[in-house]
Image 1 (spheres, one colour):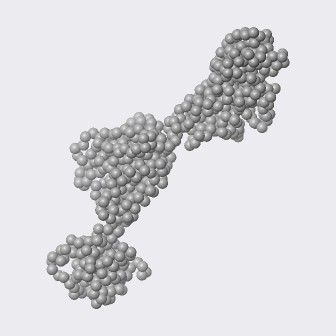
Image 2 (image 1 turned 60 degrees about the horizontal axis):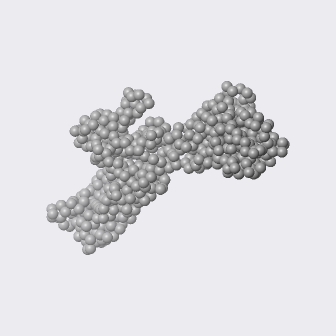
Image 3 (image 1 turned 120 degrees about the vertical axis):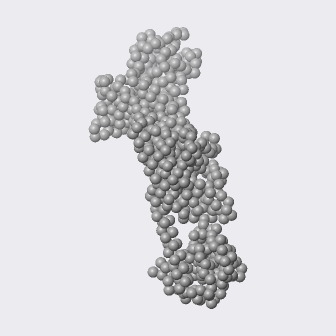
Amino acid sequence: MEKNKPLVLIVDDNSTNIDLLVNTLKNDYRLGVAKNGQKALDYTEKHLPDLILLDIMMPGMNGYEVCGKLKTATRTKDIPVIFITAMTETAHKTRAFEAGALDYITKPFHTAEVKARVRTHLLLKKAREHEIYIASKIQRTLLLGQPPRDINGIQIAQLTIPSQKVDGDFIDFFKLNNQCFDLVVGDVMGKGIPAALLGAAIKSHFLRVLNELIRLTDKKEFPDPEKIISSVHSSMIDQLEDLETFVTLCYARFDMAKYLLSFVDCGHMRTIHFNADSNKCSLLRGMNMPLGFPEQEPFKQTLVSFKPGDFFVFYSDGLTEAKNQDGVLYGEKRLVDFVQKNAIIEPKELIKMVRKTVVAFSQSDIFDDDLTCVLVGIDKKSNSQALTDKAKLEIKNDLKELARVRAFVRNFCENIPDFPLNNNRISLIELAVTEVTANIIKHAYGKHTDKQIQINALLLDDKIVLQFYDWGKAFDPKSVPLPVFDGSKSGGFGLHIISHTVDEVVYSRDEKGRNHVCLTIYK
Amino acid sequence: MKLSTDKIGDVIVVTVLTKILDASNAEEFKIATAPILEKNNKVVFEMSQIKFMDSSGCGTLLSFLRQLKSSNGNLKLCRVQEEVRMLFELVRIDRIIEIFDTKEEAVKSF
């Protein structure tokens, strides 16, 4: 129970005053006492009291200075301070308020007045905290969307540090299909619950507009980001004008089929694009005004192509405007340099490091503004679905088809970027698939040339997988005699060739009587 | 399948005019070669046109070798492409059939 009582710090250099205040408040609160300004700051830093009663005239640091210092530190600036002093002139009182005091009690004081004022300010503080609690709940549940996990070839990592004062940072993701998703990061001008609610409203507008536009357009084509922004803007402009606010945002579409980013930037922080080929960062500049500006040119989108290994950093001003103890901003340049230096690190780790470095810079893990950052990393190895469609070939049970099988496999292998297969290696793979296919044609279906064989080529992380399916006779590789190399036999080399030209070969048959040969080639 | 022949002394050089020698045409190759092997027992295959060969092609060459040896002759190869040479090493044909860089060397070796 004791713990739940608010903690009040009494700062005074006079023992009689201290005793009097302690006796007045000890039944209702936990109390701390500091006899000079420095001790008051140390105590506050360590225990974070709920309220401070502060004497003005003290040896060393006076009350104004103590209050001024408390108000500049993010951790302590919201602690209510009540000055208690014998100085009664208006000028002194005014100066106290200027230093950040919430209230002022003159000595000699009535204990009932002290009790009443302390109680009132603690109730107000509690009310403010409750508002922050509600606002941060709104933020967590309504404003921050969760990234899609199953977009091929892409990794998304997200960082959010809510500030003590909630503002209207919002993030959302809209998955369009397995290769395409939209990301919107935005910031509503203003703070507290109104900004948070407006942020949530904008998010729902995006969902609604996206839905309507998708319904109206051809299902194969998604509405362009510039069209989406235009619709959201025209449906919200009256509301934004009424509230006299505006919204900066960046709406970005990642298309993994084309390796293309199309984005509409409306006065938001410049997105960082790390280019793996040149090992350099570029800043993506948009050309649109924030949402809420009435005179708006048509919104324009910008196209940026990307490559395996590239990544993008989207963030709110809370990140670049994080301050250190001397009031210096973290800044865009520091962020770009940091990203550039650590570009080799995976998004999930890199985002943790972004957090660490900003916390280290500001020497605090509490920030004035919400801090949001989204990292979108393009996998270093391109995936088959994205670049070389997962390839499929159906052939007839005829030896004349062998050339087609080789051409299919060669074409697949030659069109994988960043997968080092030299011509000899591809020739050996051609040899393996010829042997596998010829075995199936000669043995599985007898002489029926109208039967089908299906071949799939897949590129997984670090390997190529070639799958052969037929519905013919079961095949047991153990039944095949070992090859003889003395020239006395003309056949029996097929399995030997297959197992020596690819890294792995597996023969199997499923319950439906389908034979499966699976060849694996590692990078 | 087209073959061109060139008789140098008692050796016949057969140039195989196909890019591919695999299960789809090995039988055709055998049939086209049969008349040549009936009349000659010292045979060189000039392989420079062949970019791809599989185990069926190897098997055919080995059957030719056995046939020629049984009539006291021999089979030699020349101008084998790298892709085909990799296959020969895999099935160790390079240890059984002599392979030469040039036609002249192959002819001279008999």
